[in-house]
Image 1: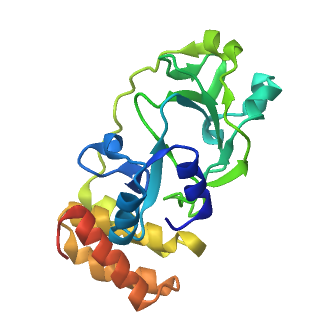
Image 2: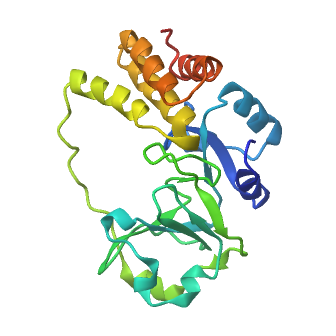
Length: 241
């Protein structure tokens, strides 16, 4: 495990697993997440550039997405921050609570706030790098995980299906991969380079690898760092460049 905040979540009982950006790529998805430290150590060596996802039985997450207007203070419930809180790489927050019931959905009259459960998914763990912003997820309030405020339950509405967006043609998507790497800065360069290489290999666009390499080196990545990202992407996708 490469980051103390990730280790902290493991110590709290979270089962962890490697992510490509935000996507769980093991065959069983988040069902393959584990608390076995030996297994996690092997995964960390096998996927050195990966992010980490986590789930914990009986723990739910209040997910604030400021890009969609989410603001936990708008709930007017001070207790929603009297718990373990993680600041996400996009600037939002994950507030963790204990609750054994089956509930998942958005909060009525509160755009950009979702309630997610361990039964159906996972969250990106602190210590991971946001695939778009390059910023770290980090523990902001290291408090005991509190019981879910019961006042929230009447506000929960079921999730609504939204059609998938129109698929962008492969050429435009490929150009976007190179641009994303070229625009990467700081600690997110390795992760974004790894992500772009995975996408290129999955699409059979191995001819993009030299362009991604050139863009990555121009951001300050070393040859060795790029080669590590490429090997990790090849192992993750099962495809050679």
